[in-house]
Image 1 (tube, helix red, strand yellow):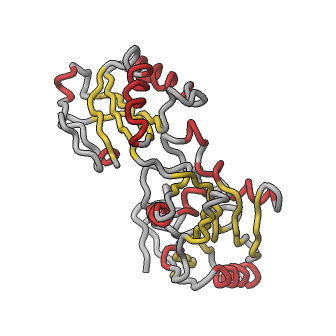
Image 2 (cartoon, helix red, strand yellow; image 1 turned 90 degrees about the vertical axis):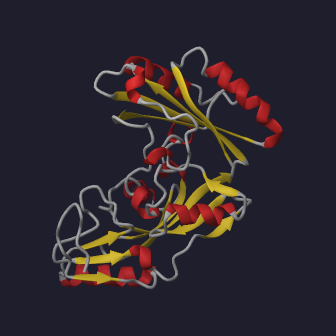
Image 3 (cartoon, one colour; image 1 turned 135 degrees about the horizontal axis):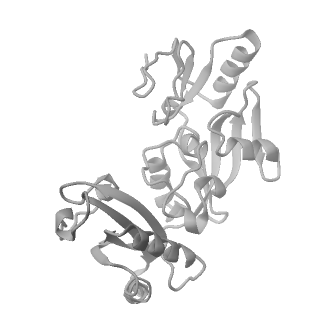
Length: 296
């Protein structure tokens, strides 16, 4: 039995489908015969416990034997992914073809259907839009148990209702996701502020450059840090700061700092252009450059 960590309730049963047809059959029976509520569970990170249902049936989307990221069309630049697939696995499958999804969330151990049911926002959204703006097509099981294919051209109303619909309009069983060539290298820069107004001004400035191919960054995101110790949280766990900074050394009020994380994608042959972009964009505006790391 599953027991939610946010909403401490237990379902009557957990259903492990072997295909989207199994899901459709279950929901159709629930609709026609008045079964208890049915909910879809990806990786169990729903904000308010929507992935669970007291006394109902939970569909365990992540355990589908057939579920995998496949159908990668390199020329058409898309990948077909099962709704319960984790984004980290979609990425790994795409990288085998030198590709990567255009838009992400910051945490990759979330399911495709889960983030597409919310919006899927990260530091790439200023450039490509949220994840729901980078979907070509969906397979959806509706609340009546119907299996429907939808897109901008086909069943458009359902397509836009399901994307960002918080699971209220159907269960996503397949998503055709836009991909692009994966970057060869990435320059990752982290900047800290003690002044909120300066922080927001500079973030807005960077976002405004999204149409400037020469000077724009590929990822821009800001957040607040409240920490009495070293500045090293889950967002940057993949990077080891060369020069950790104590918040107390910056003279902040109450131990609060504001942080911008930006990245620039490039190839080895264009490495010299990255420093030029940093000089053009960062130097006049930013208070304190803390980390500047390379990530292959």
